[in-house]
Image (cartoon, rainbow, N blue to C red; front, side, top):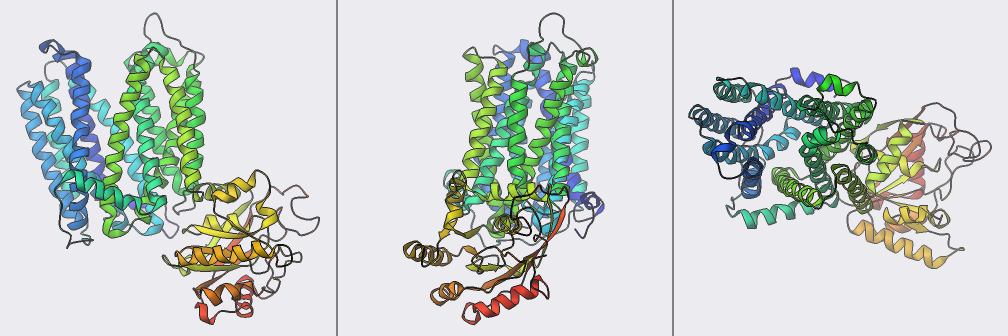
Length: 629
C-alpha cells in the first residue's frame, strides 16, 4: 500500500463503491431479519398453532437453506462471468425481494415474510463468492489484508446497526411495519446505485461449463478447496469462527436475562461490544502484521478466543429479581469483567478471521477462487447448523449457558491444535510474529524472487538459532528446513520439528546413514515441488563472517538441479540468539527492537550453481564484508 493507511481505500473508486454496496447489503439483511423475528415473537405468535420459538427457528433455517442449495452454482457464476455486472444483478434481485417484503409488511402477511427469508438467503448466497472473490482483483496484494479488515469491520458494524434499526422501527406503534417496508426498499436501492460504481474486472474462467446439479458440484468445489492443505485448513478455521459466533450470539439474550439479570438493553450493549471488538481486531490486523498477510496472527486470535471464552464461562450468575437496564447493570461489580470478556472475544476473533479470509483469497488459484469461497460458505452454513444443534442438545440436557461456553472454549482449543498441527506454518509464523514484536523489526527485500510454484532450494548464511523462524515467517510458501540432528533431537522441540517436517542431517563421520537419508528426503521434497532451505556453512558463525559453503549443496544439485535462491540475513549478529561474545542465549536480551533485514537474491539455475558462486552471492547480499551484522 506504499505506506498508506487502509482507510485510504474507502475514498478510492476501486474499493469505496464495493465497500458501500456490501455494507448496505449486510445492513439490510439484518434490518429485515430482526424486524421479522420481533414481529413473530411479539405480534404474530398468537396467529399460529406453532410457538414463536418454532417459527423463529424455522425462519433461521429458511435463511440458511439456500447456502446448501445454491453455493456451488453461485461460485461457478462468479468465476465464469464479470463480477461487477454480477453484483449489480444481485442487487437488482435484492430490490425485487425487498419490494415483495414491503408488500407483505403492508398486508401484514407473516407467512409471506417467512418465505421471503428464503429469497434473502438466496441473495446472500449468490453475493458471497462475488464479494470475496472480487477483492484480489480490485486490490494489490499488500492491500488485501487491510481490505479484508475493512470488510469484516463493515460486516459486523452492519449487523449491529441493522439489528438495532430493525428493532427500533418495528417497535414504533401503528407505523412500524410501514417504516420497515420503506427502509428495506430504500436501502436496497442505495446498495444498487453504490454497486454501479464498482470497476469492471476480468472474468477468470469464461469458458467454464456450469454444472447445475448442487450435490455433485458442491462435492467438486470442496475438492478444489482441498487441493491446498493450508487453504482448506483456513476454510475450516473460518467455518469454526462462525460456529463460535453462532453459539455466543444466539445465547446472548438468555445469557443476559438468566445469568446477568439484564433486560433487552443489556443484550444490545453486549452485542455492540462484540461487534466493536471484531471491527477493532479486524482493523488492527494490518498494523500488527506490517501491511502483509500473516497467518501468524491466527494462533494469537485462537489463544485469545480460548482464554476469554473460558473466563466468560466462569462468570458468577447474577440473575434473579427485576431485570436491570444497561445503566443499572453496568454499575454491578462484575459487569466490567464481563464487558471486557465480550469485547476481547470479538477483538481476538478479528485477529483470527481476517488473515484466514485473506489467505484463502491469496493462495487460491484465480480460476477457482470464487468456487473455493463458495465451498467455504457451504461449510460455514453447516457449522452454524451444527452450532445450533449443539446448543439445543447441551442446554436441553440440563447444562447451563456457562457450561456451554466452557465446552465451546475447550473445543476451540482442540480445533486450533488440530489445524496448527496439520499446518505447522501457522505456529512458525506465530513465533516469528512474537519475535518481531518483542526483539526484532524485520524487513524483507526481494520477496518476489522466490517462484510462486515449483521446487526451490534456498541457501542462506547462518547467524543465529532463530534464522529458520525468521525465514519461514517471512516467506509466503511453506519451507522445509534442513537441521543438524542434535538440535532436531532436543526434547519437547523434537515433536514440533517433526510436525514442521524438518529434515535432520548429520556429518559424514557422525552418522553416514542419517546423512544419506537426509539427501534422499531433500531430493524427494524437491521432486514434489516443495521449497527446501539449507544453511551451507554447516554451523552457526562464531565471528559474524560467512564461513565457506560445504560441498553438500553441490551434491543436492547434482541429482536435483532445481533453481537456487541465495538469501542473506543481516542484523542478527550480536543478538541474544547469536554466538557473539558470551555465546548464544547466555546473556539477557536487550529490550531493543533489532533491525533485521532478509535479502532475497535472484534465482540461480541449478546447473549453473556451485558452492563458491552461491557463497559469493550470499556475501554480496549480506554486505561487502559478508558479516551478518
